[in-house]
Length: 471
Image (tube, rainbow, N blue to C red; front, top):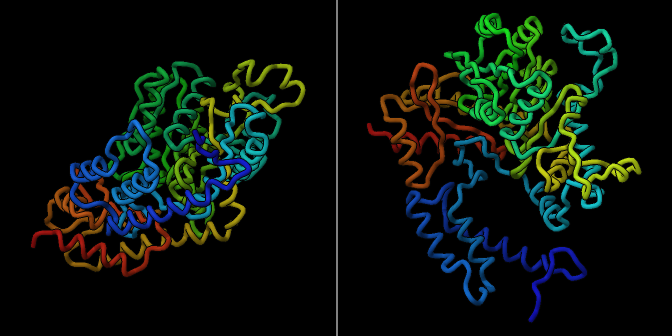
């Protein structure tokens, strides 16, 4: 019996397999012929089942890699297609995808140093850079910067830190956990109706009181309404603001919200899973003014960051807040090993086994630099502006508002928006999202995250919507 080769070892087993994968991907894309497979869920499921057949046969199938990868590619929504613009689902750059291959090949696990010697150091470098981008490096004591009434003993500069997570949902969950451990189980989550659904869900998972939700008829959290809500509360409060809403890409007024939190002694979390990438752009960074006042900040580089999933982070203003995550398992971080100098990694996550997602981020940061990342951010924001211009100039379309980041809400005049969207999905010709605004109206949503999109693609997208709209 010949044993299957390992990915990492003395023999080059990967090269021919990679060639097979790349050929199958290309064949699948050709078979799909658009941003989404045509025919809807039933047709896609039937094609996948037909291609795969018996998934666990008595005798193995040496062609399975090609067959299954091709079926996956043919049946995928392709965020690299300019007409695939529904969600915060970016097309990853080739560079981090290649780096991810190295991560999978070496397979480090960041639950103990002896499983990930270099990967743990790389992760430390990445979180240091990200925390510095959010908070600007080492901060003066909080009482001087934010006007908070902290004990006089708080005279040591704060050292920001960050954790690598699987995305915004895990980061938001961690932010609420840190707040609960700092302020107790009576902690009250206060957020806008525009907040991501993962926040109230995290409150439920953590056994916190029912969140208090402030209406956001204009799509952003109103500081005056927030202040009135804070006036009525006596329990410790965590205010969650949003920098880049899922529906419209709006940014809450962070400086004014931070001022309300400081005046009421409330803790502040900013969910910048979408908008956090603006930090890389000198042109757009100012939209996140006030973010440094947050105790915790969620970021998600598999949105604006062009990383393959997963690439989330949680930045913390004071790294000491992470001490509550300390956990001991003798086989991973025995006291004597830690005292002897082996890094303790268990307190860097709620997960045990963790793949080195920081590797692809590190390669991207180093290769592109600030200038390269800024060009990508500026490009997608410019694309959204150009698309909004086209919608505004077209007599058969209505624009909801000018884009803040890279999301554009629009609708064909007098049409059934949901039906138009589902028709495009059924045909496989375009992938657009949907969003309902505070006035109850439903809109098509174009989330432009592909920096290679061109003006002709924007025109084509509008043509497809118009062609699906009854006259």
